[in-house]
Image (cartoon, rainbow, N blue to C red; front, side):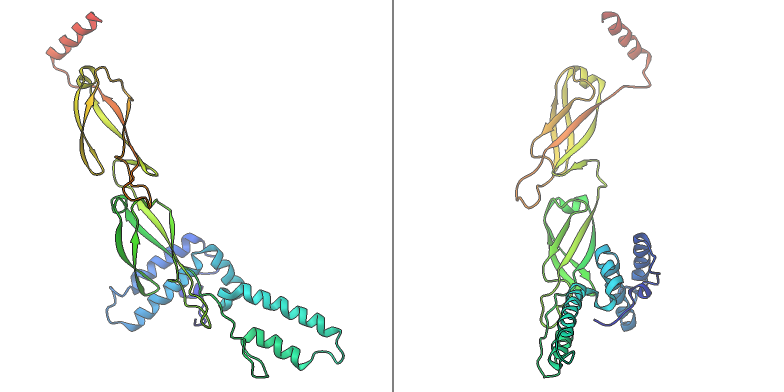
Length: 294
């Protein structure tokens, strides 16, 4: 990976907050997006660079490593281990006659840089960096399993989104992160879902909740009521003298259970009594008569 100042790439300072990073990334992503700059190689290059910078700095753990190790942040732990290893060599060399030996120096620097003065090569393998991405969907999009193509770091990846994914949930796509060093394994891709609920239903994992208006006359006398669920309308039978706040459960009419094909949660309906307004004279007389009867 080229040596790049990720803060400079996103045009922010090292003291930038997470919100500052997100704001800067969105601004630059819009500016250099390939759809806005067709056939512009420089824009494409800039777009890849800001994606790479965002994937590192938007992840608090990776950002901490980058701030500590700079260009070597991906292999920071390995460098720390190598540093400790060098210190052990130094301690061992202090007791040896003549100070450091050529073999000690060869082994020490060979372990650090993948080679030695004697021509041997350790070719240490390092795992590629993990990538992080956010995918924004509507609640209707995750009611059924679907396939979608996303672009991460300039690369198109086809993924399957299981029905029932929750807001804030993170899934891992193995091997779709950064390339490994010296044939080391690739990193992984972590996708966090942002689910926008623009429906009338309140979601609680696989269960759904909804409040339905119920007119006074049906509540008193009983009757039929058609209500909408996520997969179509159902007809409910209202019992006579149904009180305000009564809750009924429709089994299996909730949301899909994540990664359990054919299983659904329940739909809970709460009746909200709707009091009639703008009564005419005849209605008022009838209600007064009912009041006398009671």
